Amino acid sequence: MSAQRKDDHVRLAMEQQHAHSGRNQFDEVSFVHHALAGIDRPDVSLATSFAGISWRAPLYINAMTGGSAKTGAINRDLAIAARESGVAIASGSMHAYFRDPSCADTFRVLRRENPDGFVLANVNATASVDDARRAVDLLRADALQIHLNTAQETAMPEGDRSFGSWGPQIGKIVAAVGVPVIVKEVGNGLSRQTVQALRDLGVQAADLSGRGGTDFARIENGRRELADYAFLHGWGQSTAACLLDAQDVGLPVLASGGVRDPLDVARALALGARAVGSSGGFLRTLLEGGVPALVARITTWLDQLAALQTMLGARTPADLVHCDLLIQGALRSFCADRGIDTRRLARRSGCGEVLHETTGGRR
Image 1 (cartoon, helix red, strand yellow):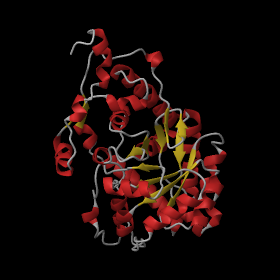
Image 2 (tube, one colour; image 1 turned 45 degrees about the vertical axis):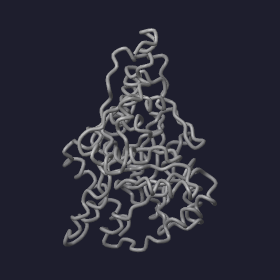
Image 3 (cartoon, rainbow, N blue to C red; image 1 turned 90 degrees about the vertical axis):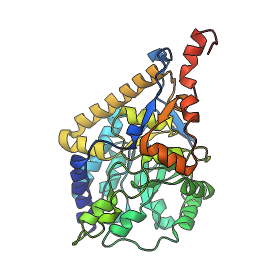
Image 4 (cartoon, helix red, strand yellow; image 1 turned 90 degrees about the horizontal axis):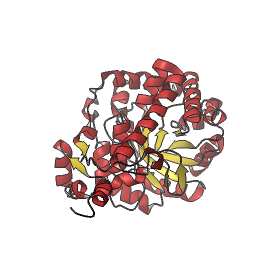
């Protein structure tokens, strides 16, 4: 049943990809254009670092799948694409491996095909400390993702209904696994209060993974005989909203969920993410065009991100947090209700330093 569920997830996720309207709240974030802010392309670096982790680019292939023969083949291809493009990669939930060790190779292939890359293992918040260590050991993982998915579990016919132990268990895993721990949502977002709680548990980073990409509550509802949990479709906050909500919490944040192109990557970085992940869009590219198409897409994204940094005057991805941003629409209303001052984002002026120098310091 677990293998069939994994295959169902891929099928239903692809149906969502084809049905997406194409718009999400990243469209309510725009850069203020400073025409003299540009720098020289050779001065631009894509390198990023957070929580003692250093990546050559602020982009990663986020958690997707594993646990069946079909999804094992997908993981193999994803690992090859990560190796060829030089980006980090996370496994899908390894709970299936804990229940059935015979499916280990559907996850282990991520390391076999990508022996020198940065690989993250992935477990849920109910995993025992021993299972978390097994996951890390199986992949020789450089870090561990723990995913939070209460909306998905609620809609899942066979899902968990006991969530009270998740926080304390995360703390135990963090203290025991010996690699950095990144806690992520699966598409419903992490609120400011949640990020603060994760910081206090000793987590090294949080992947906000907001609404706008694959909707796992919708996927699980699609597996229900009566599809009677449709009221959970679209639950949670968007990735852009979560990034605004989590500013200045004191924990490095990553962004995923609804990332469609290099401009969304730049927007997320400008809103404070240290790196940006994609799942559904990359999976669709892989299934439709194979490994060469996915490698080409990731490579193009990285080149276009460097072009955006050049135009915006950001020598590193981290420098994008100094760029002036305009927040509009429903996202601005969210900020008003949550007490977030969007005006300061429009006046950060870091991307205008070249203009400042060119005019001799006059404003």
